[in-house]
Length: 407
Image 1 (cartoon, one colour):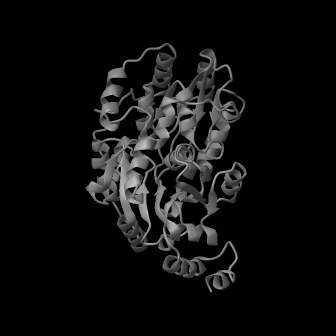
Image 2 (tube, rainbow, N blue to C red):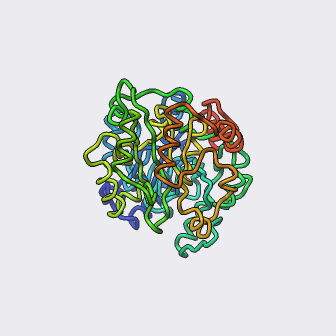
Image 3 (tube, one colour):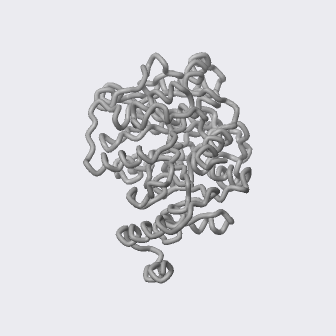
């Protein structure tokens, strides 16, 4: 009977049809106690905590029936060709997996594993791996927080399904709960799976050689600012005295390179991309590393010499590598008024803040010459943000997941 009904639908079908199929599967299919689902970034990317944990499970937990869920045909084909279990979220097989699984682990929101949160059965327990916790306020913690009725309902549904939210320290658990409000008792300190890679990094030539010379003779700095949530576009090198020619000349003199990583949502901003494309034109000292070039930026972090950022969660991860960071908080006042910060930004800043190109280049020169005046400030914030510094976060998360699986 079920096969006859299902047979009327093709693989890529609409939400209404999938809802009917979900209800049938939920009623008639038994839960698989070993089936665990993984997804990330609305199903569009294979990256982040979910990716690192998924690959760890495939290697270390062969008894677990792990599946990656995606909406991207490109990711589906890539994982399928490499022998990894994968299914598309808008397919009958994807809905069947949702109905049979006991738990799913994801980064951003339920749409990491389903095209609509209404397709997630109430019987599926969620473990939120999160994309990272930055210093900036988001969601409910924002000074001015307005969401639509639909978004409110989706978040309420997600909150009810969440069994655990992982974090990197009790301090992070506190500020994370302020933002997402799922219940403080659900926040469990495990560390982030993606950061395990820092303790045993493997240089991938086919991926990283595009950005770093094979012999790694040059100094490499990553510039990765935060996304400003649809307000004024991010200003790269927002200095009144900025000059492309002066910056490129400085980098050449020091045999150095800056890799620029705009937020994936800013790739659609013509103003930003016009500026960045002009910036990289005619020189090898400044290069773009977008999400299209490299989904998983953590693969790059162990092999760079320093970072430039502002309020992004990436610098919390980077603290584990104990390398210099330069900050450019050019719109701090505006950001503080519109978003606010979860802890005192400047008193905890683990690196100098640059206000001019001249000052910026001087701070870069310090990195190239091994001058590091912020080592102690980095240590203090690292101890606040990270309880564990051992590369065993994947194991701790799956031990937590085992409580839901009954193992």
